[in-house]
Length: 238
Image: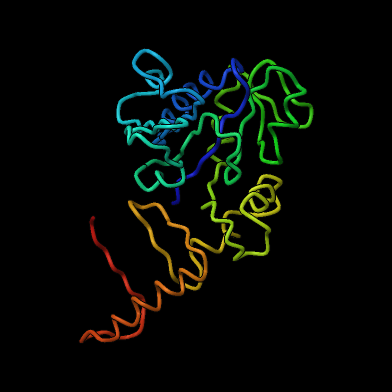
């Protein structure tokens, strides 16, 4: 099953870190492997701060800052490019308000923030401040929020390739959040019987690239003795 994902968004001091840590614990208690990605506008957190809070036994934590990314490459990286390195059932993303290829949970300081943070991608709110048009959860209903995430989290490739009838991945994501679509509407992961996975995670390909890769592989295989049309499996470890 492809990795699911949900983002926890809110402004400073809204409780994002607290919810992310508690939700990770709740999902792991439900038998899920959880990975966490943290966005920051400052340098990446070091020992004794948020990253240390998230770190746990056998838990993957990804840190993304303006000028560095764990494991400290010394240059900016994008979350979508790091995901093939992650093996988990559910990815919790703290921050990343500009990510439009996954749903989100809102942590609000005031109800007026909801419209700006929602962008049609919000599943619910968490904390003392709620939005009247969204489901609201607090610490005493955290288990119900974990169940919602387990049921509704998803992740699109973020290619904006136009292979489907939507304008971009954000449009598909909003459709899914409204209950009017599903991740299967995305045509870049498994279209026309061709797909690629890395460490069990599907890699999105726009249709043009997919045709080139498929035709190239198919052309080479046809030259091999013993080849015949049918389902082909190629496995290698890098």
